[in-house]
Length: 146
Image 1 (cartoon, rainbow, N blue to C red):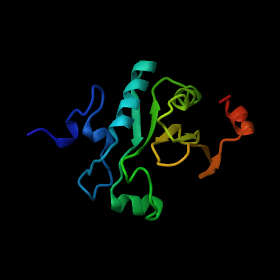
Image 2: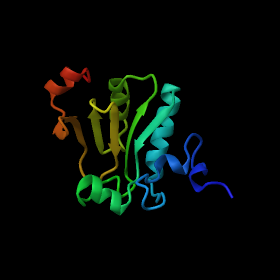
Image 3: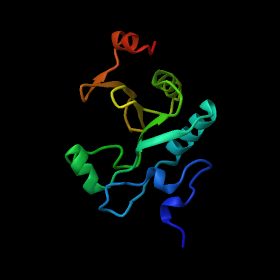
Image 4: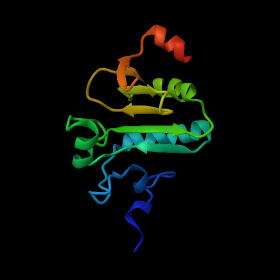
């Protein structure tokens, strides 16, 4: 029998790309199909490999990472990623055009983008010194996002 993480769930992604990797839960998996579709769109748009840094996290891992707070990764509604050979600012500008995304984060220190589908108004932020802060016009200019 094939490894469950090698099961394809879309054209370019497998279950393992999105499963929890804490080592305790056995690779629990839950992910929004809409987010997977968005990542497929980005793969096609840039014709480069999309690297998933964090997707679903189990309850145990969520407590370890986020102190037990409700998190969109825990709900299968968030992904942190980068795209090979594409500048972070260019990825950010593209995801910002996608109306279905209600959480968009620019994380330059880690070289990744955070996207989520929260049930709230859109929140666009940058992570600076480990803290989420609003992406003001000044910060947009500083990071070349305008």
